[in-house]
Image 1 (cartoon, rainbow, N blue to C red):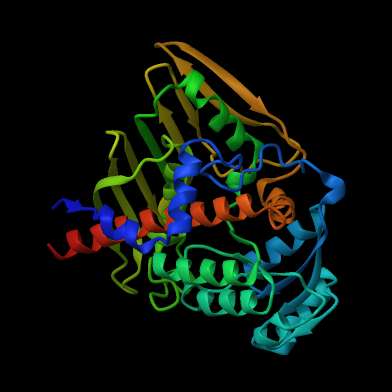
Image 2 (image 1 turned 45 degrees about the horizontal axis):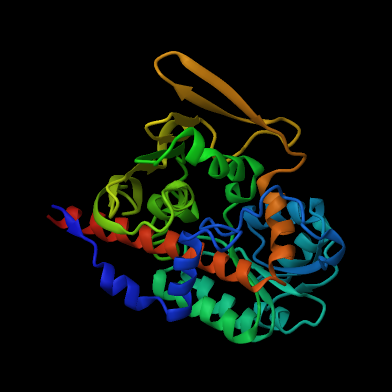
Length: 380
């Protein structure tokens, strides 16, 4: 069953300002590009003018612990506070990461004068309320992904715009210099990218993991891993493309009902396609990406940039049958660290804020489209 994507309905859901941003990005006017937040090299264009952001973290789980260390490694970023539902958890986190202030209420932390930005590391189902509260208290917002829906993203970004604060989602690989390099050379080395093919698979056997909880994480693997498939499409497809048709499928875990795998194809209005698959039941970690065009093909087997920071991030450039060249893009820091540095640079640049919001909205819109298609095919 083919699902027709209602382009007019989607356009109507995005306010006029964001539509202008899409047009500007497609024309190359916004320097940050459609990907929005890969601010070139991970280096500030004006380091002396970039202010240090004091971070408050909502949540004390695995991703929050990981990102606390990345904040400590980033320039123009420092830890200011942490909140958890239990004070004991907040205090333990604060002790481990040398965070100055612990809260047992995220609402109270959002009002705390000694933080400038809130990193929302919570389950998807409760993320919107906290992001909006942070914005309404004058705090910049970095929200983990995915979001509950495109409408949820729009409510969050509307609150950020209304309060004059920045917004970014927690996608790391877009901040890595390799991503910027590939986007820069695609026209010359690939040409029109008629195919974006991506796969993100890994094994997750613990069914007590939050990703199997359909109330807290309703998208399952399609939200957790498929978000990255969609972000690849947003980052590397031709500027300004819109969805024409979608065909998607999912498979559920029989015990929990969680979506444990997904696959499908998006056909864009310029004739290009994005094929994707993701899942929790893979015997090996797979992070493949292939960008194909008439001039050549760019191929990665680790597009999420999991290599140690002191190792260059390689990608393959292929032409003909046997001509393969390995390209190296060196960086001293991981994309997750550069995300916080780029955030500090973004918050004083309205164009970059709008580009960041647009990248999140497009990613979520395409995620919603593949999810709805998979649900319809599931019922067919």
